[in-house]
Length: 251
Ligand code: ADP
Ligand code: MG
Image 1 (cartoon, rainbow, N blue to C red):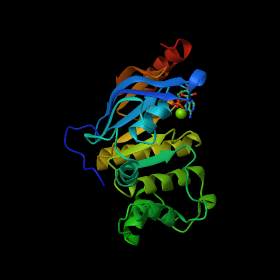
Image 2 (image 1 turned 90 degrees about the vertical axis):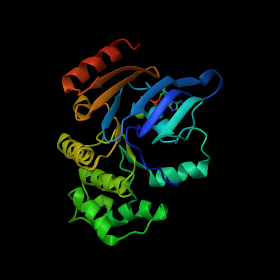
Image 3 (image 1 turned 135 degrees about the vertical axis):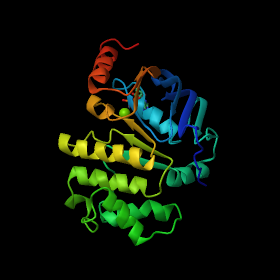
Image 4 (image 1 turned 135 degrees about the horizontal axis):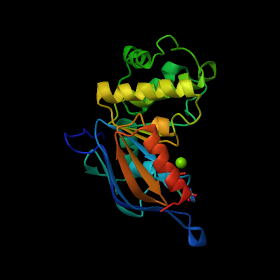
């Protein structure tokens, strides 16, 4: 199953989402009534102090975590109670993921890593398409390289190519530049910016880095599992100031 986004409908939306982790005395309310949208064709950064619920928010939006209350929408469709096999299909065809640690398969070449999700999604894999997507991330000359033969920045670009190969309605990124040096981070962020501007990609990105967040169209701030602010057209300075206030005195 795949979902085609409709004009004006957010690519991803949470309404009143509650998510608890752990049980008994160890229970933690990671999300406490979060309502927000990731508008289609734009890039939203999610920031907040460590433990504020950023990863949980991304996991709930992607259907990787079940919510304990509220609703989750993907391209306007309520996926809150979708059965596991439907969510698995949606994750393969309609969502892309990139992570801090790249999560490439070490024994596969760059082109094999990119082709894998297409195969898993049951889509026909054309070598030309795989090459085109790797060329679009500047790795047209690294097709047969394995992850250990690539730099961190190159590995993350393979991961982006892999995530983009199915043309997902939304690309979820959890600290995608967290393991990169600043030059590689800039390259990756510029690539994401281009995908949003030129291909209308929707990006939902968790980051700790105000400079990374400033490349997004908007930044939402979490504190203690609640959405506390939203900045449009962020600057690194405005983001850093807001974050410093939250880290000093969480709401
Ligand atoms: P962030 O990504 O902002 O650092 P998380 O979403 O990872 O925050 O975590 C939010 C809260 O939920 C934290 O208090 C964290 O300790 C707790 N938490 C996250 N995952 C689990 C888990 N699997 N089991 C128990 N507690 C968890
Ligand atoms: Mg996290």
